[in-house]
Length: 487
Ligand code: HAM
Image (cartoon, rainbow, N blue to C red):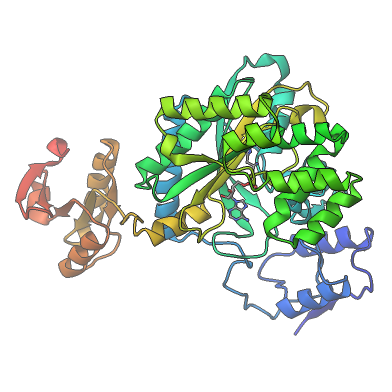
């Protein structure tokens, strides 16, 4: 055994770490593999291994070849059957976005850490996969797409004409406690409208999610949207003279109401400096489930919050999804940047966490130094919806689909079979070419497994005549056809 021992007491030292990482990454894979227990030991030596920090192995040893074949906790492989489901889902995301006239965008999965650090004490910040890269830059795997979108809008500046209607489907990373439908990596479908201050934008966004639900067989009796406006809280805070810059922080605390005891919530709100009276009123408003009660009892007449919500409900009727939405003042959402309407999709049986969520974020751009542009959008994860489809027995059956299996009946005809395959592929037909000599029984079995439509057999006599045999598998019909006429 040729073991390479690198002994260091503080691997997090910025001096030794890049050297170690360079050393490991430059080594040919077969020469050095990293035993898991050494990595764990090194992680412990570095203080327990904070999420996302890069920790170099203490010892690099060439004799270990075994690796854990499972992906890291909370992440997924996508073998073909899962990939088929993912593609099916994403195609619906994309098709709905297309129906609503959106353009697709994408951003890097790795961003600067600063993009995701906001002052409000959000949960998402503690869940960040962040580390220092080899150039000593603080970077993070994106936990959401909205900050990247805001960055790109600022970067594009005046070169784009508003409003923008952009959608993206991308992987996000959050070091979450794992529960049903919540993972450490997930894909999010986002649709955002930049440059429209009217509630028409939120109303159309919800309409696109409803369109998606309907396409995949989910109805208003399975799923609903809880809708509120952060302006409700804003108006209350204003009434109590609470400074505006506390708004984001207060919303984040209130969003935790179902996760931590009410006394803790009150204590945290108290730390922000707002009065006991204001805290009591804030908590009271969260239990309101009717817009009329809110208007009459709490806000004392019409204000922006009520006007926005009323307009949204009226538009919902026009778009045709009234039965899907309800007012619920307890929806605040856990991200600091929302400023107006907020909404969340939920399953009516109450078994799952939020299916999707979004809202208006008119002031996010200025927090990055840009000019504010009114904006709103939503994020829709790929995990909870699959759980819901399973519950409802609505998961589609998706087999592999290949149009043709092409097989040479003789080893000498493998070149001819390759020519047949190319001819078909040139005409846009998919072909699974049998690459070895296999008995016909095996070929039939394979054809059934890949759901092939036709079997194209290349036999000696037919090929000498420039023809092949075709068998249509659904009907059993069989015929000979000249290669040039094969469609
Ligand atoms: P969010 O509520 O944090 O909002 O996430 C949106 C959706 O992403 C959730 O409703 C859920 O479907 C999915 N999701 C979030 N975290 C996880 C996880 N750990 N595992 C599985 N699925 C998850 C946002 O991210 C906002 N940026 C959305 C937005 C876009 N607002 C305006 N534009």
